[in-house]
Image (cartoon, rainbow, N blue to C red):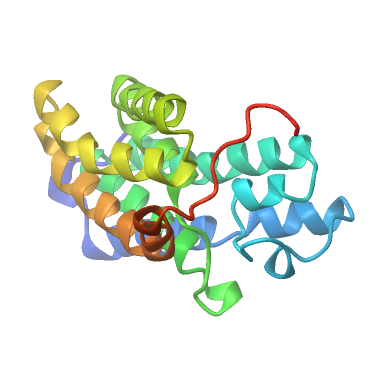
Length: 205
């Protein structure tokens, strides 16, 4: 059962934040690529440790595993914190896991861009909020065929969706995570504006 707010001491919230950060810091893409003999992701494609770059190794199964595990980091952190401590701790856990993913201590604070962990966090906080984010990503991806643009759109629109869904308590967290996603996509934004960002390939050429 969650701990009542009256006895939720600062040390407990600190433990939630640190544990969630360390969970988020696990570079699953890098680990999976090495275990499957795909090489060092930091030397492949964009050098990113996320699922999109894992896909560039040619292994769809490795990319899917990375996507699920990176999303799971945020989701598990939120669910455990909510169950054992409470709702405020759940949001803190989601934030800490996300920060762990983009700034992992194990990789000199240079991690992924956070989209999968962001989606996992939202799905755990509210399934319908997470679903809205996924559908927004899908809609933009189908229309523009640019994964990064779809992620940026989902992150930017999510606070608005949360407002209309009657979930105002999550708006601030979504806005903060969205801002961090935009920051991590600075290079992608420049390429989108210049028309050089790679598009999603629906079939092999």
